[in-house]
Length: 196
Image 1 (cartoon, one colour):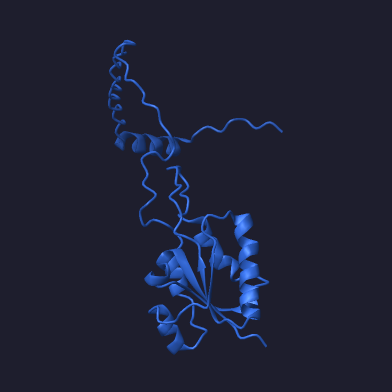
Image 2 (tube, rainbow, N blue to C red):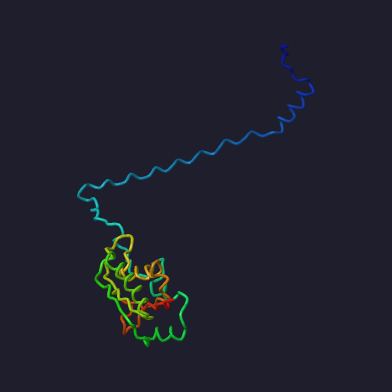
């Protein structure tokens, strides 16, 4: 079924001519502006080339500021709730209570210090002592300036964590930084529970 193409009638042709007569031709498009060519860069001769200085990751960062994400050890201990008698705790913070025993972990490695601390705490509790002093030292600054800062005093940061772990956690009632006359930031008061 091939259809023959349809032709316009006389009326349709007149109507088309009337519409076409009212139209105006589209204006020619404006000329597209020429794209600015970038100026060629001056190629430096090898002797003019800038010398590249050696670079080490983190070399311009000062890790000794207050940008640490964790609060300081002093702030962490100050934020722990008081579980001992408040009056005794006040005396403890002022350095008025005298420690009944002490252990000096200063200079020991972590492998030497942990068993010595466990033995000391458990034997002190068995002997009926209530307040002991654990000396860690303030630690040496071993920060090598790399992108990840190194904490000052490995033992100083490790001892409070050990005191919260078994087998000595059940013997410890309160941990606090020592008063200046007993070592200040380089020592901890450990208040022990009474043995049952």
